[in-house]
Amino acid sequence: MADASSDRRIALLSLGCRVSRADLDAVAAAVDGRLAVARPGEGASCVVVATCTLTADADAAARQAIRRAAREHPGAPIVAMGCYAARDPAALAALPGVTAVVGARGEGTLGEVLSALGLRAASGAASGRLARHTRPFLKVQDGCDARCAYCVVPLARGPSRSVPLAEAVARVEALAAAHREVVLTGVHLGAYGRDLSPRASLSELVQAAAARGPRTRLRLSSVEPLELPLELLSDPAAAPALCPHLHLPLQSGSDRILAAMRRPYGAARYGEIVREAVRRLPGACIGADVLTGFPGETDADHRATLSLVEALPLAYLHVFPFSPRPGTEAAGMGDAVPAGVARARAGELRAVSERRWRAFVDGLVGRDVEVVVERVEDGIARGTAREYATVRWRSRGAARGAIARVRVAGREDDVAVGVEV
Image 1 (tube, one colour):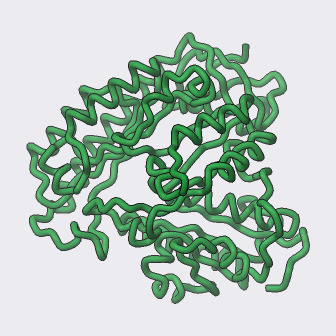
Image 2 (image 1 turned 90 degrees about the horizontal axis):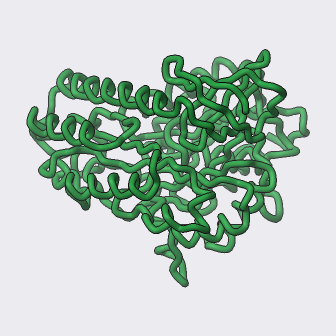
């Protein structure tokens, strides 16, 4: 495709984690002024799909999304990028409409995507204005040096690599000029800065970013529990900017399964970290990942997981049944858990998550919360609170992207409802 004028549209489809969304945000910023981002239902002259390969279901979802894009945007070239594109490029290249497959391991990923679209990379830093989101995701780290037995992401993304500290802070500052929240994300966010010279840390990044963008709140995406910078939660300079929301992957409450997974902590240590985080950040929303049906997982192991999550102040769980991934240690393990058993265990954990989330939202009733307005339709505003809850209220003129203070009056399903104050 030749360089397109601004009336040409690009469709951006993100599958999987916040890193995928951050990758597409970077694409959106790079094509700003040359291609308009298509809204749902609009035709597009080209399509970029950021894929996930965490599970077999994620692979299937990526293939389905690409086939749907080929039907909805006939003749438009499709670029597949991300983890699945890195792990099995031939599978994606064979799909209808796909003209390029760009992996996730190299430093020049964005440039390769632009080249596949027939666009040159713009000179200078990418624009800080990301119209796709009111709460943009900023990827400050990519890749992973850990070798959890079940995880294919290090094979897809390559070794850990960090955005230099000064550059990362400058990117936060650019986003802070137009947004009231920035989400810091990475494949292994807690490892931020270890590969830099001189070394840096996630704490240093947050402290520097908070000092440079005092009007903008910062949210951390998933952080490994042993790498959570607890000192930040009580730092008088950084804590006010940091959203009281932490996502700390657990995976299992069984020490035996955690060891088989190659996780570097036990259930007791994980519990200590969660309780200390809540002590330093009262009322915080704490979430966790749980992987059920890992090879060799018994009913006793599953009960240990249920017992731990019931005992801890967790607000929600992201639950995934185990899926063997080619190239990982776990793919060659015997003693597989029957698929029906794994699904049933996942269902039990999801029921706990639903109950915990509703209790967490109920706990916000009577409180005033600070919400980034994400949508206003027919006088009803909707947005995300610092505590991560979705909040809905009748607006008195709230503008998308602005901060509103809302007094939570109740809950409807999983959403807090309130009145503007």
